[in-house]
Amino acid sequence: MKMLSFKGGITPPERKELSNKMPIEAVFPSNNTVSIPVTQGGAPNKPLVKVGDIVVRGQKIAESDAFISAPVHASVSGKIKKIENRLTATNTDDLCIIIEADGSDKTDFMLKMDPFTVSKKDAIQRIKDAGIVGMGGAAFPTHVKLSIPAGKKIDFVLVNAAECEPYLTIDERNLQENTDAVIDGLSIAMHLVDAEAGSVVLEENKAYLIPTIEDAIKKAGFTEKMGIVLVKTKYPQGSEKNIISAATGREIPAKGLPADAGCVVQNVGTLIAISEAFREGKPLIDRPLTISGEAVKQSKNLIVPVGTVIGDLIPEVIELNDNVTKILSGGPMMGFSVINANFPVAKNTSGVLFMRKEELCLEEETPCINCGKCVEVCSCRLYPVLIANSLKAGDMKAAVKYGLMDCVDCGTCQYACPANIKLVQRIRTGKTAFRAELAANQAKKTIKEGK
Ligand code: SF4
Ligand code: SF4
Image 1 (tube, rainbow, N blue to C red):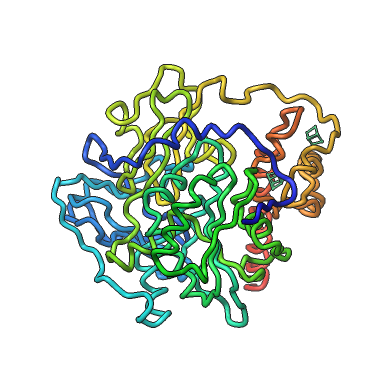
Image 2: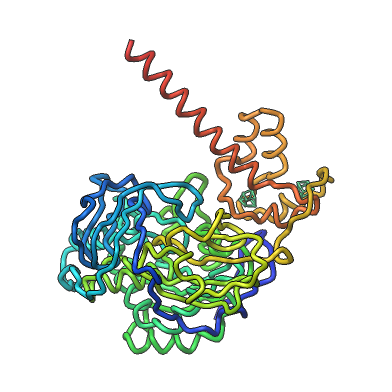
């Protein structure tokens, strides 16, 4: 058993003990209504339904013609009540389809499919038809990740079981409760990309899961091809670049993709969704997630229909103390701060945190002391302080040179900064400004060429 790591990173308090002993509980919103975002990863979808339509669980309700897109399905059977902009988990207003459940358990799943006997093209299409996206946070369509460009050779499929964000424990619970489905999903992914080996990459704090995973690998008959790699507990272990570096010693080249290092990385939940899409014909319509934070009376792991509004689980399922200072969709490092709990769970919502004041860093910024700590911890080997200073000085060219667009928003530099400088917020704002600048330049060029 190897024990590996990547360069840089931090070790914030884990806080996983609040929820990691809580089994995954299936719950339903108290008002029997879901609010399903029309687009959840990839190019924008268009609704396929209208107000008043009757839909059943698993029916496709929104899609796009673009290759890099993922359709969305009804997560409950019932009637379309509204199609309108609503608050979503990224704290923006986006188009949502509101369905009132009728209490029936009718489904419209696809036919079951054997991933090992159909053509790889049909199997990849199945993953697209099931609307599967990366469930670890990025929501990138999974069929695109598994469509390996000609000339690239994949050696390893890595199961991203690091779950390095503090508080979140849903992958940990899924590895314990749905181990066979994870291993099945891994075998399917390995088959689709012609990989010889598959590894479950676990952080040291979850080493107790090794016997369970080993048993599942043995039961499935994959001991020759699959194994476990134990890595140090460190944030941000879960980024693709870091997990590949830690588990294989390979580096993704600059501007490259995991496939350029011979790897494909898949999240635990995504592999379960892949298994279900073939074995049950089920699209991605249910989302397991962690509810935690010290402002919650009892932290939990839940599974809910996609589109369940968090506020509709309060107080029946989520009981709060009266000291909620901040609500986060996702983990404390990379999650989005949301204005209230009335947002729906999306396919990539791995957790919702209700934090009290004492859990947050609310200290004022002080001047930079040039300690270099932010550079030391950045696993992308960027210069956060120089990026921030360049942006402050209005020098976009210098900010890009120091790595503005290579930043993965992990928040590590900000966590490590003794002056509490809001480095990530500045970098995110800088990235938005740079993209707007590029778009404006492109528009000018198009107009000029058109003349
Ligand atoms: S947020 Fe960006 S700059 Fe800061 S540590 Fe992460 S990758 Fe580096
Ligand atoms: S960690 Fe903070 S104080 Fe230190 S160099 Fe970076 S920005 Fe400045």
